[in-house]
Image 1 (tube, rainbow, N blue to C red):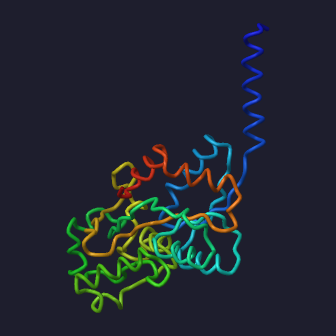
Image 2: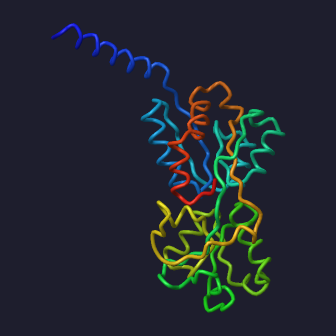
Image 3: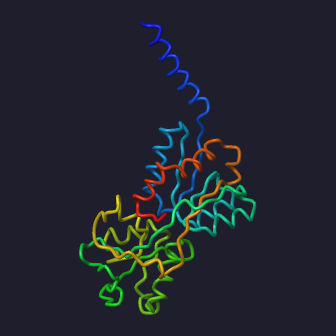
Length: 251
C-alpha cells in the first residue's frame, strides 16, 4: 500500500471519528403541514452533519401545550409565528433563535380529478356533504381556512358541513380517504416539485387570509445541544431552502 493511500485513508477515518465524536441528537416538534419536507431535510441533515433529528409531527396548539407541560422537545417548527414568539416571552425558548423558515400556502383540495375548479366556485355551489379543515383553535391552517370562508361570506352556510381534523394532516386524511369530498389543506401536502400529485385543487389567494408565517425556535431544553444549533443553521442553507420551495412554500 502506498504512503499516499495510507495518508488518505488515515485522514478519512479521522474525519469519521471526529464526526462521530461530535454527533448529537435533537428532539424536534414539527407542525403537521411540514411533515414531508422535514423528513427529507432531516435525512440530508444527518448525512451532511452526522447529527440526527428525531421528529414528532402534530398540531401547533397541542405542541404548545405539551412544551408548557415539560415535553422533551429541543427545537420547534410551528405552523405560525405567534406560538414561538409566545414561548420566547414565557422563557421556554431561546431568545433570538426564532426565524421564519417557511410561508405556508392554503389550498382547497379534492382527491377527485376535476372536482375543484381553479377559482374555488365549488364552495358556492355547495354540492357536497363534508368540508374538511383543521381545527382553527389548534392549527393555523384551520384558522386561515375559516378566515377565507369568512371573507367569501360562506362560513355560516358551510359550517354544518365542517369535518374538523385535530391538525392539517388529519384534515388531509379525511379528504384523501373520501370521508370528505373536499377540504382545506396545506399546498405542501398535495404538491411536489411544483406539480399537483393527485386530484384537483384551488390555490387560495393570499389576500383571503393572514399570511401563514411559520417560525422555528430553539427551546430552552436545546440551549446547549450542538445538534439544535446545527439544525437551525442548516434550515437557512440553500439545500434545505430548495426542498422547502419544492413543496409549495413561498419565500
